[in-house]
Length: 333
Image (cartoon, rainbow, N blue to C red):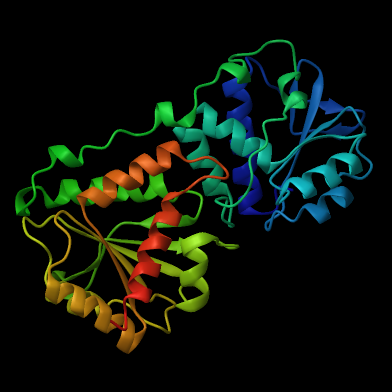
């Protein structure tokens, strides 16, 4: 399993998750087989598949003793899939990504962020499963009972947008806060969020760029399919006034169809003036480049949406989808 970088990262994450929940974990050899972890004599085997395809998991765990707890990044897509697979593996102890997402989201912001960083595919549309008795009953000493772990919303990062003054003096603070916001809002859909890069002669290209994970949903599926976009650019403008059309014109130069980068999200304090909106629509109509402009009010709504959403609820990505659809529907007016 450790042949891939993703697999190694996933096993490291499982080790940290176990340490979070249990006092002692070890790596032991049972009956000639070296299992990945052990808690008070109970063996744990970690299985990682790059695409999380659940149909491939039975073959991977074939031959394992029924006493071994298998922890995997494979997942079921819906409740019907859940029921089918529970019957199929009634003689196995299996913890899937659906369970891990439920655990990590209620444990800490650091753990869910680390889990998402292990995966190449989006976790936004994956249902969470709280039926984790195999994990609850593992071992005899618990560091923190899973039933009493805090919900993720209780440990969400604190943002200080209201403390940052619009203007040139605190532009860097605003950029840093926007980066933290992107990672918080879209950790399940984006990966490799990189800070601003620079062109020659000290000219800045953009503030943030991130790759859309495989199997995107919601807003990310729209831009992935319709705008042929694998990478998304974020720009932070800590202006005291509304941004003007020049921001759109200059930013257009950093979006390229051949680079699969045709969408930019602009964070700005006051929003866009009328000329900027015209330029925004012109870029979409003429060149197929999508600009989503978010002001301080949008940011507050996004944070609240993230803290309140659940597996079947309204997400920050849904909020962006509404923004995009509104722009698309209004394009011909």
